Amino acid sequence: MSENELILNTEKTFEDIKHIDENGIEFWYARELMITLGYKDWRYFNAVIEKAILACKNSDIPCKDHFGVNNKMVQIGSGAEREQKDYKLSRYACYLIAQNANPRLKAVALAQTYFAVKTRQQELTEEQYKQLTEDERRMYNRKIVTDRNKYLFDTAKSSGVRDYGKFNNAGYKGLYNGETADDIAKRKGLKEGQPILDFMGSAELGANIFRITQTDELLKDNKVDNEKDACNTHNKVGKAVRETIKKLGGTMPEDLPTPTKSIKQIEKEKKEQLKLSDKNNKKLK
Image (cartoon, rainbow, N blue to C red; front, side, top):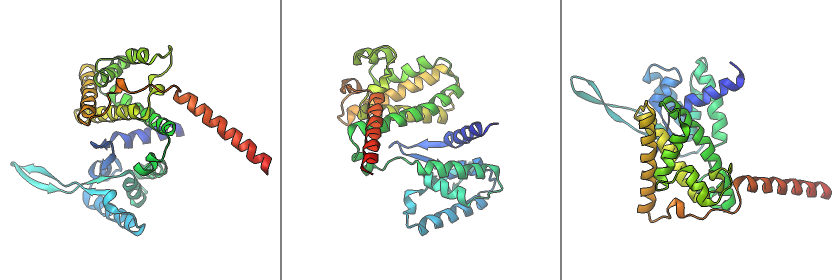
């Protein structure tokens, strides 16, 4: 296996056990992470978590933002139940756990690299996002859509999907009141081959991010294993997102304005601006 393949497989392993809450925030369950890292006994893994929590405290970072207690009742036989300790972990918490875990375990060594890299690439805070221009928000959200779609289509494949166009349209039809990708492109007045996602504003892209992440989560949680149910799930999520927008008094996706510039055009202009800025700076030296 090549280094690139190993990196991709490692990323998929930890992304497969990632969850997304109702606010679109990613998290991992400690007990699922424990198994993925190669630990078999909760006592030993809990000791690692406690070391990670201490490291978080020593860095003056609020632990409750990264290590959320998530105890649950589990059956232990004869109908009896007992409370089982668990945590909802942020990506940063996973990084600290990996750094304090047993490095002799191969999965731990891979996790240390994966979470170290990904933590540095963590998403913007809400305050940072508010400070972005609309073009910057579009570029940021478009990248998230691209990244999340990779995992959705991997999950869809595992769920029995073979016709990805049909699967994709099922989600769009739910979110856009029956419109397919082609319908959306025609309404936006796009030329053949122009990606509809490149001609969406930040709010419209945000609605699609929610559609993508929640579909990925449901396909996994419900262990969907056939294309029909996968498409129905995608359509159901699309409709649910649409209903949420309606309840909040927001603008329906199809009624949002279509930007005049594509994401690619904005990115090109940004690169040209940077080149010009670099050129001017060299002249001043």
